[in-house]
Image (cartoon, rainbow, N blue to C red):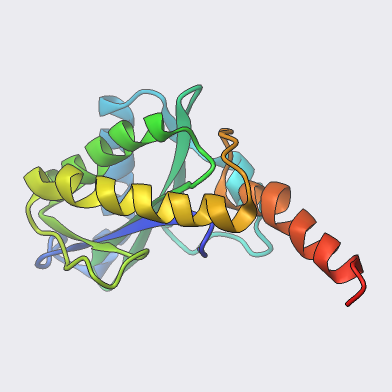
Length: 181
């Protein structure tokens, strides 16, 4: 997860699963509840097939994909807890913000999680789901504008972060390496 995506990592505020052997059950429960609340969320087979190594035991990779945007949800069990990473590529239409924030807020409230924004050291950990939109939207807009300036485009296209790198960043790096100094 690099500069091409806006990422929020959610971790339990306190132990939410009673024992390490419940990790897989906890992931499966969260996946089921996410899919029940947002039927458009599905397993991200494309992401899993593009990886060089298989997923860790109990790990789940989901995708929310519509014409309005795409974001990924990665659930990782560890030591009796489940951490969740939610991310979208900056090239996605701004319309992806609303469902992204809804999922982040819902996970925080439902599972008593706190959110850490990977794109900013200036945003403190969020513990109040009601403050997610007000806190994240300015940060998303700022980081998205930096990305657009860096890759020299305002094109909006529904892509995963790795696809965004391949489409927008790799050609720039290749062209820069072929241009004489």
